[in-house]
Length: 125
Image 1 (cartoon, rainbow, N blue to C red):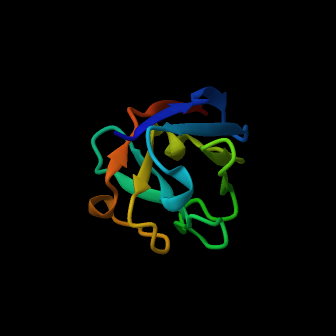
Image 2 (cartoon, helix red, strand yellow; image 1 turned 90 degrees about the horizontal axis):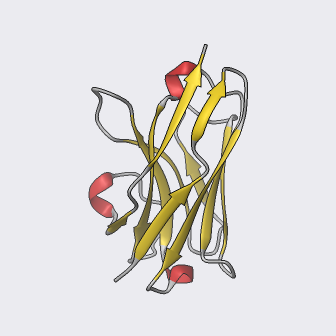
Image 3 (tube, rainbow, N blue to C red; image 1 turned 90 degrees about the vertical axis):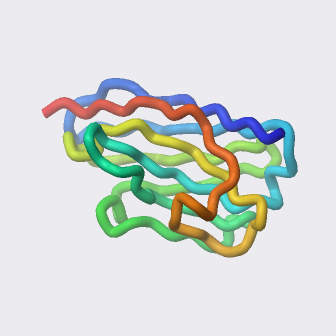
């Protein structure tokens, strides 16, 4: 069974930065497409960014493009989300997800098979 554990969340002032990490275990990390989603209070879970199994392809939502960068280290079984220029609208629980099919960079929740428990990011104004 694949396990995903997120870390790196916290409280930050507007304009600040955070780097989220997601460590995977129990599976073949290098064969999975990986992604970050987030859910703000009272809203649906939304796609943030995804990365292909080789890191050759990434896709990032328009709402965070230019501020957030996804990356992965297959040797460490870890995917990262570097978040810069944070604003209060980025406040949410951030989830890491893995797609065992490993094809491309899916953006829909239903395309991902494994999920972490989430890490809270709070941006104060």
